[in-house]
Length: 487
Image 1 (cartoon, helix red, strand yellow):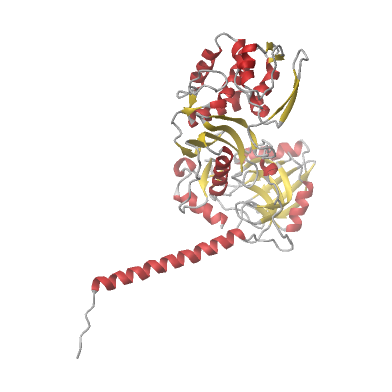
Image 2: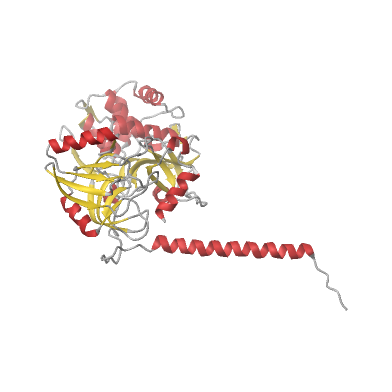
């Protein structure tokens, strides 16, 4: 006879260790399967693609899309609108999601009906709410950044709402047979009305940002001491780091200098380059003493090459220019911002990442032409008295990035690199959302901005969230619908 002594605690620990190992193995298997599912595009039957349709540069596809936002209508309004389009002899599509059919109208007359093979169900994230849309664009081969699938013969209605040929796997949009999609595609013209009818369509039509999944996500690693990324239209903040901390502004000051110049100085007024202006530190604008410029023309020298001399010219144009800068900051609500000069050379010019967002929003709403000007790659400008011709290159952002909508960069030894700009970020199937991104105290502004954009595009979707007032963007219910939709 012999006996065996059992260490009960040790045995229990061993069982727990095995259980944990099993969970890890299962999770790894699931993750691997999901990665394969997301990285291997589903190719529709009869279509052979060796690579995504837009491999080299998809940026232009998303920047500055048409602004035809949908108009959400009730049942009676849909009927009246259809009758009006017929009476006006318009070309349009009528999408009846209850009957699961699309009818094509030419000059107000019904021509052909196409059966709908698949569409998102009621209260799903990719559901197309009832309303009036327009064809905003189309592509023979659209590669979905969300579903990682090919959508042939795609017609864009708005955001995540497409009409396209039926695809393998789960996908959003309204899907018809490939031959029917090709026919609809041939008749689709940009701006053409598309009426979508669906009984019991949700009354609470709210758009929001939601995460693609609930898994732990890695926040972008940025070198900046403070940063913020927010939707320029909605104001929703998607990333922040020390957003209220105060740091030197550097040449971002020139955005406010431009605002005050545009609002307080006649754009046709001639401004003279003085000795004091030429003596201002830096020569990026190449200004010479005695030159004269119309105020509107000198803005390009202020913004594109970031001329400190030009900033001094503006400051000399009005005796109370600095007071106007600080008064405008308070008017906009920039409570953490103050200015000691018009160029940003002074280390006492300070602001916060959140205040910079407010400034960008103000410029976008009140002075969109300034934002457009700041996007120009270069400008040739002669002084009004023909003293010199200048070629001013944009030093604020690398050329060729069509996502860049506009903004300003800055640098001093005290501030390090600073940036306040707007980019078109891809967070839906079609069209970019204008995202304001601000940085202070950065050691690599280009690297930081690109890291933030990647984080936004990989982690978020912008679209219709059913009953978002109750569920909001972070609700588990909404998250589950999106995860189901994109798998």
